[in-house]
Image (tube, rainbow, N blue to C red):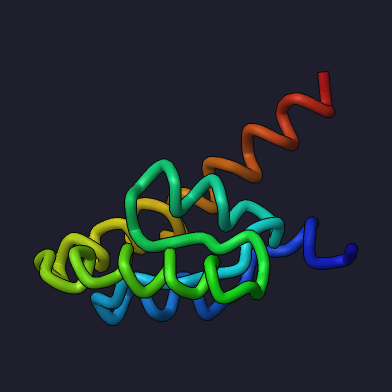
Length: 95
C-alpha cells in the first residue's frame, strides 16, 4: 500500500542510462509515466502471461534510440521540472 505514494528512483536512473523499463503497475506514478511516454512496459501481476507480455513488448523498445529514453528522463525527472511542480503545489495551497 505504501508504494502507491512513491516513485522508484530506479525508473529515472534506467531511463537516464538510455534503457526502457519493465515495472510493476500500481507503484506511484510509474504507470502514468510509462504509458504517457512509451518508455517501457508495466505489468499488473506476476503471472506467466504478464511476464510474456513484458518480454514481447520490451524488444521493440530496445530497438529505439537510447537518447529517446534519456530525453524522457530529463523531461520527467529534471530539477527544473521538480521546482515547477513544487511551486505549483505551494501556490495552490497558499491561496
